[in-house]
Length: 112
Length: 107
Image (tube, rainbow over all chains, first blue to last red; front, side, top):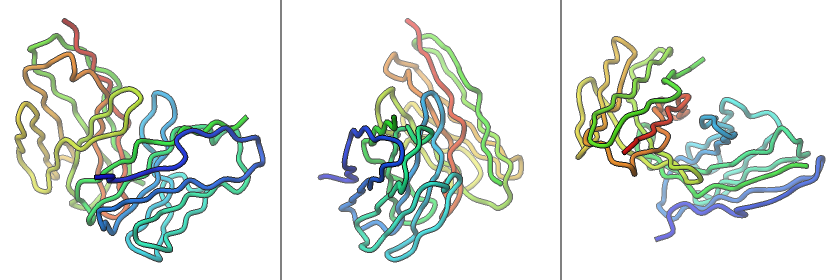
């Protein structure tokens, strides 16, 4: 029973490098989200998707891009990583709006 | 924009009752949900109020008053394992989380 799986779990990037975080869910959920959480802080919404082929901006979308080509996958891309993007990234999914959301275990990203 | 405010920290002793408040400043009658997060872990769902009133789930209860833009999470019979951060969240498609409350339970 995998639920929401994020890869990779840990990554160190140099400033200016690009990378993609992959989120996969096996619950046939329509909604998927990417959040970032800085130390001692709350969760801030980066981008979200309400269904396959759709994406929308959240609270802090700058510097990130996303794609939802398949219903089960939601990819988060950093085109040119900056130290300010050092954070823990959480992916989440939900059956529909206003419902329980299920989180992945997080991806720890450090940009040096 | 949307914002949800919570107290930054709450302390209590084992066996006590604690209430964590959440006030928000957004229009629309959305429900309010609550999540728990232990250090180093992922948030996990605790409770959801779609309508005004009290929802009870074991030792945890959650309350919502949409007319007052206010909700709270009530934790009873506190245990050491309840030491964690607690977040309220609201919205429909765009789910926004509150600032979070760190609960420390002492023996």
